[in-house]
Image (cartoon, rainbow, N blue to C red; front, side):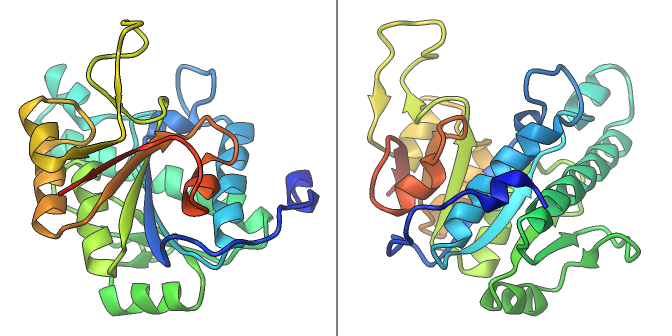
Length: 249
């Protein structure tokens, strides 16, 4: 078992939400590498998920595939777009399996649920079955996007969160919220505590792609943007602490 699983956890606190979806990029699994998976980084993120799971929160996850293959980049290099997007979907399945393995090291029951049938490695997506997994406190990792080309994993995350009845999407990034300009390039960048869906779209702030933001807006689904690199950040927000930005109405 992973040594981190034996570390003493803070006492559980009442969470602000009962069911959430955590969306992270594939690049978040790379660590300091330029490509692929960095197992210690995957384990660290899994430990963050465990800390929230220990609060009794029902958790879904969607992980991008950009650390392995990004469809848009393949298309830009001359590959046919539909084929490139399907390759990107397969990359998300690989990341989902890696996260499942890390979570199971912490003795958390996990299901990888794929929008593209591959029964030997993942369950097919059936909404009612996925909801039942959540009710049984299993972590559900939704892989292969929506199963359709031309849709990003951001859109897939918003779609699945809506279907699962999640109360919020947690978008883990490298920074602790949404800023009016890139905080890594501009020292005077200002962080928003709250910003509307329409302002995110009109200001082109890049929180998620436009389709994902519009879908969240239409379903009144808040998006909480926080730093995945901040230890305990995911759990802290659910306990009413931490620094983050809420995208909402």
